[in-house]
Image (cartoon, rainbow, N blue to C red):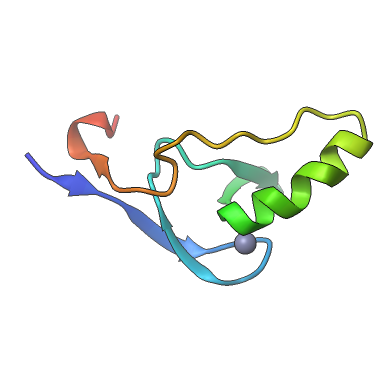
Length: 72
Ligand SMILES: [Zn+2]
C-alpha cells in the first residue's frame, strides 16, 4: 500500500510540477507524451476552443499522488 506521483518539467512553461502519471493531461511531441501542468492547460484551452478543438479537462486528481494500485 502506497502512493505514487511523478515529477517532471512541464513542456509548456518548463516549470517542475508533480502529477498523477495515470491521469495527467499530456501533449504528443515527436511521438512522446509530454505532461503539461494546470497553468498551461488553462492557457491552452481558449486557444483550443478558438481552433475548434475540445478544451482539455484534467481529471480532478490529475495533479495529486495516486494509489500505487492504479499504476498499470
Ligand atoms: Zn506548464
